[in-house]
Each structure stands twice: as C-alpha cells, then as structure tokens.
Length: 448
Ligand code: ATP
Image 1: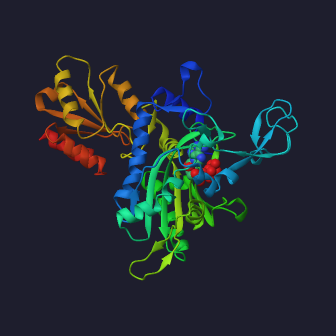
Image 2: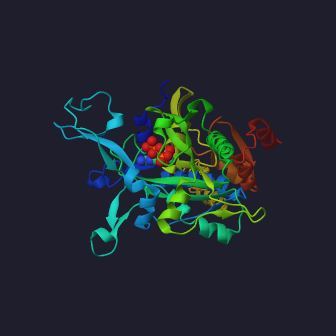
Image 3: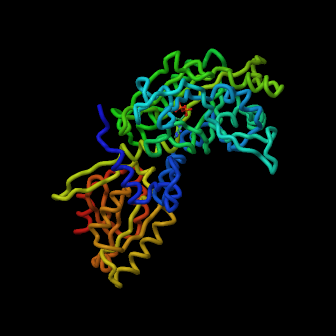
C-alpha cells in the first residue's frame, strides 16, 4: 500500500513556505544536510515540546537531563559503539559509489551494475579531536545517541532527585551518525535530533514496562493526529536486535517511500549500566530503601527522532482538496503542532483597517503564535495560511470598525464565526483546545 503523498510535494511545500531549506544552499548545498526555516523551526519546537510535556512534565516518574555532545572516549568503548556501531559497506569497483551492503539487492552496483567489493564494517561515529593538538589521545566522538549521557549520569540523577525506581530520565538533543546512505529528505541525515527516555526498572518487571511504553509511544502519535492506518508496530527478529537489546519494537509509519521506522522502543536489559560500571570502575546499582534490596536496573528505551517525526507529521497532515472549483493545499496539523496558531488578516491594506488590525494582532500575540499579513488578496492569504497549517484566521473588515467584531475562519471545515474583539483571546484559546467550531450559533448572536 503506497503512501498517498509524494515526497516531492512535501519537499517543495517545505521550501516554498519556509519549513526546510537545503543547507548551505547558496554554496550548492551540502549532501543530506537541511536547515529549518521560520515555519520549520516552530514546528520542530512544537514537536519537542509536545514530547517533553507528556514524557516529563505530566509524569512524576520521569525527569529531564541535558548532557554534553562530546563525552569521555571511554564511554564509547564501554557502550560497545567503538566495536559494534557499524554498518556493512560495499564499494563499486567501477563507479566507486559506496552502499550499505544490506540495502543492496543482488550482487551488482545499483547505479552502474559494476562489481562490488566484499563488505567491510564501517563505524558510523564522527571523530574529531579536542584541543589544539591532533593526536590519538585527543580523539573524541560526536555522540550517535543521547542515551549514553543518561547512563553515565544515572547515579547523579538518582542521588540528587531522591526518586525511587521505576525512574525515567529524558533527553532531547543532537546526535550524529556518519550514515553510508542518508536520504529521503529529513528521514535519514547525518546530523539529527533524538528524543530519548531511559526508563530504569527492577529486573523481572522489564517485559511489562516494555509493553507499557510501546503502547504509550504508539498512542502519542495518534493523539497528535497521525492516522492510525498509517502507523504499525513491528517486533525485531532475534537476528536484527542491536548488540545491547533483549527485545525491541519499532513504531513504523507509512512514509512516501514505504513503511519505515519512526521510533524504536528497546529493552536494553542491564547492558549499559553493567558496561559503564566495568569501564569506569564505579558501582552503578540501585538500593531499594524500603526492602534493602540492591540490584542493577534494567532499562526500557523509547527512542524517537525529532526530524523523522516532523516528516511524519507533515506527510500525514498534507492534503489537496477542491474548494469551490479551486484546488487548495492544506496541512491539517494538530493545533498544538501548527507553527502559527492565528493569522490576523485585514481585508485589505486600507488605512482605515490597519490600526484596528494591528490592535487585534497586539492583543493576540502574547498569547498565541500569531502572524500578521496584509499583502496580496485575502484569498491568497487564506491559501498561504492553509499551506502552513494555521488553524484560525481572524479577518478585520469595514464592519469591524463599526461593531467591533471580527470573523474567525477555521482551517479544516472552512466555517466562519463572527465574535466580539473583546474576549477574542478566550474564544481562540477554547477553540485551540478543541471546543467545537459551531458557526450557526455565533452568526446568530451577531444578528441580534
Ligand atoms: P535506522 O534503522 O532507520 O537506521 P536506528 O534503528 O538505527 O534507525 P535508533 O538508533 O533506534 O535508529 O534511533 C531511534 C530513532 O532516531 C529512529 O527511530 C529515528 O527516528 C531516529 N534516527 C536514527 N537515525 C537517524 C538518522 N540518521 N536521521 C534521522 N533520524 C534518525
């Protein structure tokens, strides 16, 4: 079953409306690197905030952390990344293109049909050196996941937060992987952002918690508007489990190129804490104050990609509709994710309308992300707001000068209501929270 949206359409909308631009574009771009424009920066922030709210703020068993990208090299030796964080690489003997061996079907180069070399293991970590002297001892790696910053702080967090197990530690931040074949827009890049929780539990309860987190994480996407039929769960086969994992599920999304991983939820057992205890010589265990029992916790890890989630939200929200004989492109983004919540649009740039329209903008912008737009025709401005997914447009017309009321237009059903400027914030707040957009009753109040 193919996705109903072409990636080209998403890439073009992202460029046209300021969501995502090719990085270093004026220099010809840099392969697989992307910059988030004004709309993309807001969308990405909203995705991260929606995650942090549910995963940290609304729970009393998860706390946040923000650790350094560069860590002691011993971390990566103990975690197994230096030895195992590899992909099999093959090179074409004719055109010298390199491929991930497991992504090539057959034995020939997918580009030119040339003969391929034997696979060799290629480490995906980016290396750099710290300080002014480039020598072996100064080698550091850019983290390929945020998880290790959490494991090495386990003791610090437990002691300082005085929390009991089960306890989750959450982190959002950049990760770097020297992927052999990045691509599919922002789906696979070499620099990206992770949203990860390491949830520490008593051994023996780990399977129950894995099931719990798989369900929680699947539901998170659904609650934020992703259609259920575009999501599925896939359990990893024994042969594809990462070196640290006991069990793992992927939440997959039907991207334009087909079903692909959106998030992984793994049972990492006690692998990481045990390895870091060995590597650092520090004991990393937990003592239950009530029972006196001491153990090395097991860890359940929901690990999601910010950029991949952004792509899934964009693809799922994208729609082309016909309205009164005209095509409109619209992003049906969840209200909490929409980059702009309200567009303030005076009917025209008429000097009589501008002061009132600016007044409305000033009222709204401390409360909601608001955009003021008085360029071009009102129809074109509605189209632009639809394409960036703005849930509500407030229009100021000549009648507004008389009756101090404005029209609110809703993005999805295109209904319009007329409401007093006084109290406009409250109406919009309620609608953003999901209050029904009942056009009939409010037009009726206007007629009174
Ligand atoms: P894949 O199999 O796609 O390479 P992975 O299984 O290696 O991904 P994890 O290590 O489980 O990925 O990372 C968790 C999440 O981080 C992924 O589900 C994805 O959303 C995101 N992610 C991982 N690698 C990349 C990347 N190169 N670019 C963008 N997002 C990524």
